[in-house]
Length: 595
Image (cartoon, rainbow, N blue to C red; front, side):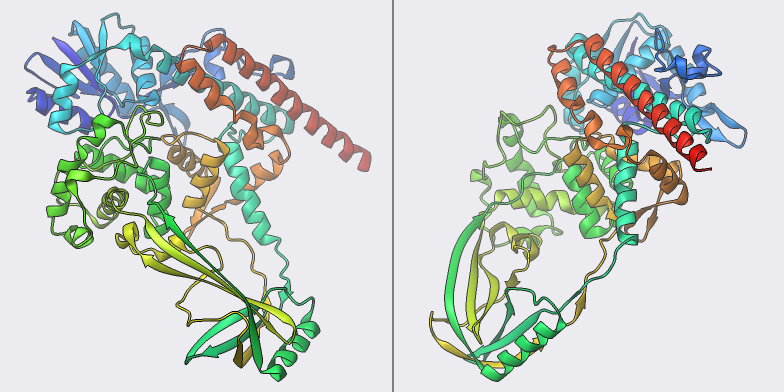
């Protein structure tokens, strides 16, 4: 009997169906020589300090570091404190029984660092000894599952991926636990959870919110002139902001009296703008938030649902480029899409040549272990509104990459009115190309440029000024962060991975550090308290661990040992705890001296 372990019940049932394991049992499916079981996500975690006998922690005990890390079942918070998750404990017993009945194991958890870590921890915790092989697939279609089962990999090929995942997990424990316990000990406050990713993310949210709250509006008085030619009116703005209201009024009166403007320069440039590359999870999260106001957590759940329905490829990918073998599958997929009535209007008349698709998304050197998010060509049925919105984004992006560039003409016009320089910047789309799919003209508009078609203008000609405007404006405060902006910040700062960023945001929500206010993410009083307490400390800085992903990538390549990496993390944890104790000791001394 062969055991198959997945990390989600729906995935397990799909694999069981394809393999003919149709008999339903408690927490598993069996038949045709297989027993397929599953976890409910990650049901194991590294044990807490108290589980190692550490109760009353003193400053001399820092940095905390177990001689050997232990695993424990997932815990949930109740009115009586943290207790083991009953569902996790029960399913762990089911899995233990399934594995005990089988001679070998097929690992079918997510084809990722996180999926590899989940199984290896499970294998260690249950004390398994059976040999195991790896099912590594990028979609859940019947064809992909069957092909994957015919080409199982030795798990030794993924040892370094596991090592990198385990190292990151232990490193997060070392920094998070040490910082959290040190702050609790140094301040006497309750245990507010800190972490090397969640604390900088919280700091970014709080800093943006504080900037909004502390905003002091400033006044400005832009001056515009309206110029006419051939019954076409266009507006030009004074290139320099008047220093004060009186200067603006003087300029306004001068232009009003002059009554004409001389065209001094006309500059035109034509650009061919290529379509954006295919979606990875980060870019999909951002666009789903921008265009449909879906939160990061919602999109993560929706993409998982679409994946389990076999409609899209593996979603937790950082890839944006295709390998040759994946590209070879696209013509048949695109043919199916173009035949569906829902998408036919998008492709009709666009010259989509299935025999000669654009290859600009193909790049073997930049391709990752999983391709970008692609649709599989299976017809989408019974999708709710939000699921269809996300699915349509993915389809649209695939169509965009097959179409020609968008050709845009950018024009800058300068003029003098009363010896003062005015300017207008416009753009005109000459050939829409890929922009036809969603019609989002703002994607090709440079900041401050208007979409407008100008009359024929000649350098040196005088044109009539038919109106002047003096506008009083007050500067607006920055807005709090949206999901798209926060995910973009995390990506730029190297905080988390495509797979973990939604979980980080959810964790901050669950801990009542942040909440939604409309489409914006804002801190709670509890979150702001933690931010103010930790502000200025290294644990709040995004740069603290910005080089970790590079080191973990080297570990995956076998170029860095786990011991070397974790020794560096432990040293950093010691520096962080020393800084915390020294900072709060100094603050205590300053308060005593002030009293």
